[in-house]
Length: 433
Ligand SMILES: [Zn+2]
Image (cartoon, rainbow, N blue to C red; front, top):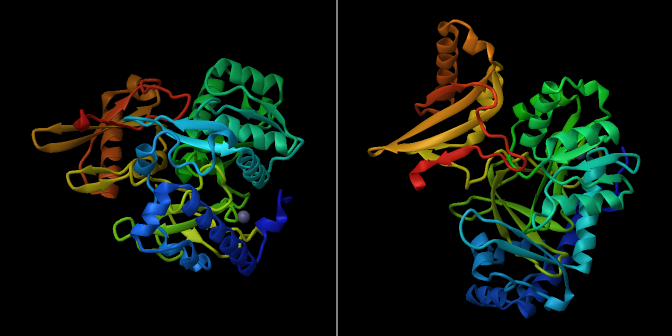
């Protein structure tokens, strides 16, 4: 297995600590002198750049939240003059102003470097044709993957998101071997291929690099079997750089974090104290090479565990467990914490349902209700009514015993639930209206 940057990907822990410590010291010094927001935060905590002597001192630093980026909209947290910024991206929030991020020329090069590592990690090389079905534009997905794919010398097909007929035509005509998109869109493509009677064996697809939304192991199995590919997870967020902060290797036992650029920590989201390896916590990143928008201890809201043990691929870069939930995605139904991914796991394990589902939350009087809409094969609707109600009962029982909260199951015909060409809409919470 070739690596893009063996030096950094396979460094000993001691060497990595050295690199991280030096880069952290430089970053703290830079933000203290160039970003008034951080100078003020550090002063409030009574610390100065000199108090940061090594990576161990990272816990002394202030946290940064998405709200801080919004409060400083659009460019208030930039650490370089605007003339040094060569690109901006922005993510649309569901409410209010978008989150704006900026890149210097060196940041764009760093972005390409980490995506190049990620693509190699997924098994791609210059011999591949990479079809990029992430959106191009203000979203970091399309352009982020694009620059990294060019860097490794692959043939890039910059088709962007949507336009499913065209996606399939180019998969066929251009012999694309790698597909990059959201996992839910990959499933939609598989479904469309089936409808068009195009056997997946007639395509040249080998690997899928899927990210931008949480997905479960069961979803991976579905995608791998329906597209006959190896499906790997890519992780990233625009605040940190975009896709390529971490990526799975062929072992599929967690995502290697490119920690010489992004130092990960996991914390207890309530006490903000660090948690140990193997314990679930909120993922926090400090960027230590970014020029335009360096962030200290950025709270991602993603829940995961870290694993510093060696990986069978030979990389020493720390692994984060596949994120299956964000603390933001958590629903509280009658006082019980519910993650959409828990329901996805149950539905896919049952096998008779399709991986298309939606959760609808309502309030009846003072009581929260959770409806699970799930697609099942046409045959259930043509068969005698008994089968349908038996399946409904089975799903209801399986979900309720996992969640510990009662649910209403609604089986629907294929194609009832709207397909997304980007991130899937899994939850409709009418309580917020
Ligand atoms: Zn590995």
